[in-house]
Length: 246
Ligand code: IP8
Image (cartoon, rainbow, N blue to C red):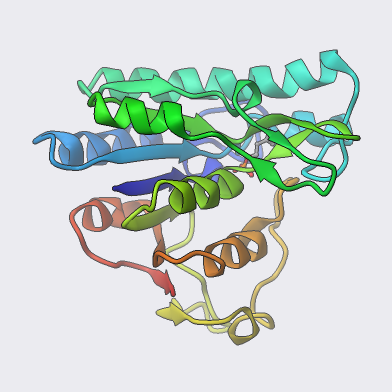
């Protein structure tokens, strides 16, 4: 079973509010369609927000830790994400991928400490029935804080853990984690290995950019790959392109 994250910055124009990168999304959908064509690959897809969600969240001062009790704000952020989810589903369905949505806002919650609880029975059942569940970064109920953002990376980590994923892929705008000379770091074994080269994300990103990704992936049992869109076919075909986080 593969958990694949399509980065929000890959499938949207991250610097223009609510703008899709249609060409990139079509390429990603093509790669997914050829990977699941023969029915032998179980795939769960998670997509990030890019320009759908992060702008709304920062306008309302909402992040993974700062919540809101304002339903209008929560619905605006959630609505941006479900709009993007609909675009992703449509591109997949057009290619005969049996993609169905799973919206985290209706499925999980955080406890007082901010720990994410995400039941995965529906995802497992959908997989067993031949569907490709498509989750997304979203709003989520947060005990004591109203509702906060849940990032796609957190969802990837939860799903990979709970469903004992064999492989994890993060399709990103960069070809992997880059060192100071812009070369792809092939393997990361510990956060300290890359602390000095991981800068903050340069667009509006309320969930922490590459630093959060690497940290979340290091905590997992399964190996994860971070790679660019050009390598999505290779990853889904069994290769380990880009950076492997072990
Ligand atoms: O792009 C964030 O998901 P991410 C979703 O995976 C929202 O961090 C609502 C900003």
